[in-house]
Image 1 (cartoon, one colour):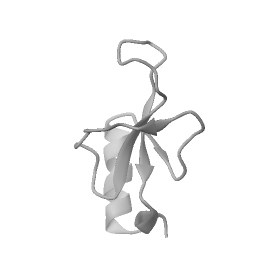
Image 2 (image 1 turned 30 degrees about the vertical axis):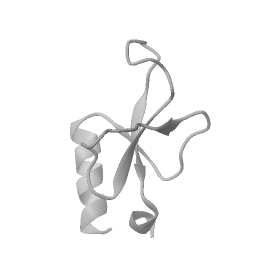
Image 3 (image 1 turned 90 degrees about the vertical axis):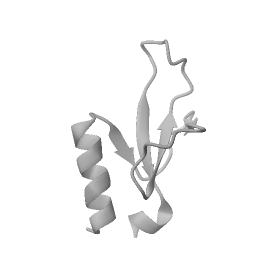
Length: 66
């Protein structure tokens, strides 16, 4: 594993966030979010931030997956 991937996985574990290599169906990127570790992008399931059904995760960028 690369150092970047290790940092992403560590961040996800500390923050109780799922990590995905492909974006789940019905999900999209979270525009304007700048706190994702380098090599990842915040994604969410399109539910309102005020909804108990909202889920977020980190999508690995392609260069990290290799």
